[in-house]
Image (cartoon, rainbow, N blue to C red; front, top):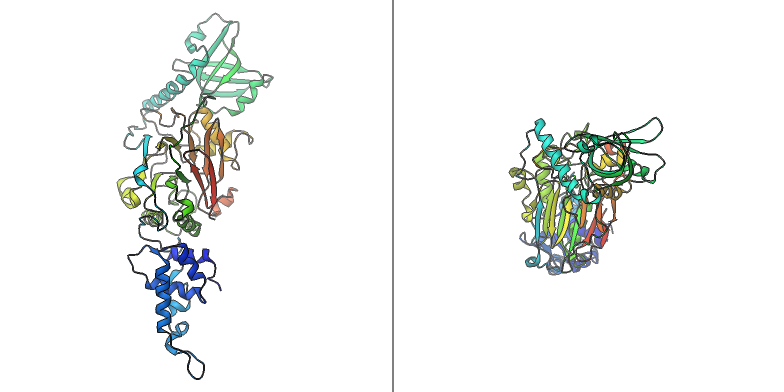
Length: 522
């Protein structure tokens, strides 16, 4: 029978607006006509019920048997039972359960699961860093000076203890010779005629040239440098004091002694991103499977859902995007996203930040959504913060960043250092630089604020990104770095730029051990 698969039954029940107990799905799968039994069970279940149980199925099947008449002398059944001929809603089985272009019907806001009970009294989540409501930038020249000075001071404070820092004015006025150290922002990188590297470092006083010889072991580190990041160097001054010959390069880095925080009970968080509701390629069925899984005993310890941006596909984000939209109005996209969010158990904490497809400013840091969109996405009292946001989940510090700068890191650095196939390695570079978007003026738009909200002042225990639609995770000096893939199949635009997405995955993080497992629902 086409409906005999329990997974298929559960999928159709979800699209019709119901979660179902395992016993109910088993009963439906075991009937002679699962297709008809499913429709009868749904029709017989009260509208205010959120979970279809075994009792509902048994009652519906009993009602059906009670209305059936025995076969007549000729061996035919009573004509009134021939629903295949006279009741199209039953004869086709899936006609009224078909998914629409964006995934079909979804349940009203759920309150939890029949077989799973989460203790909300123990849940704890707070945000330590968020631009929302704090934006003051006007785009004037002085605003840019202010944000770069703040970046320099914050990162220089992490580096000065590693070198004997001397301001550029002091180096320029020196008599030359001797050892020196400098903390500066990378102003320029260029190769000399002899193949050496000349790096110009800038502090709050001026610019000073630093030469990295091509035959030095540190020469490979030059390949990792990005403009506008803050580093420290040490080496020897030339005899006339006009240049420094670099012996060592230091990044702000995650300290090797860093010891991550953990929760004091067994609790898990699901890390997802890039849902892209409104796209023709949004994987509604995969999302339904994920949401149903959250209601199962296997997921009883998953108490947090963290979404790292791109809830919807957006409008006008890339050329000819309108040809790939199932929902053309941005507000309707958020309405549909909210409907899908209702499938998530109501006793889970949900936290979201925006991405570049969302209806917020493109320049980072991005404030959280405006009040109108917050009202639309108020399901389960979801928490909405800016991009990036450092959140504390039961003592575990999770840095959520959508990840637009990963495009730039991957484009600028060698493939072995950063690639789309291994996005977590690009994230390692951001951790090393302690900044989520170090390079200014490229693909990543940066908004000037009174302070640089993109600096990683605190070392996170977990670094969670999205954007590149690739799944990758690993540990960098004991910090978990995870890019959680997406929920969108390959679009024509992605095909044109050779992006093969990893779709329908949900990394599940144990907050008490920082171990992670990845579940596939695609």
